[in-house]
Length: 59
Image (cartoon, rainbow, N blue to C red; front, side, top):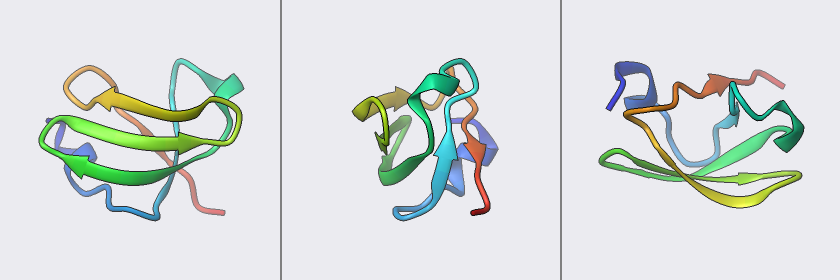
């Protein structure tokens, strides 16, 4: 897992760097390399933290 992704906790808001159309997402869980995010426009998505560095949103 990417070191940054390791600090992500449930409730934090993020964006996917390659999918801006998904909007802001809320972390649901972060277990191992699997990060579950509920995105405003895409719903619940499981992301492989080894391949995607999520962007923290401060809203």
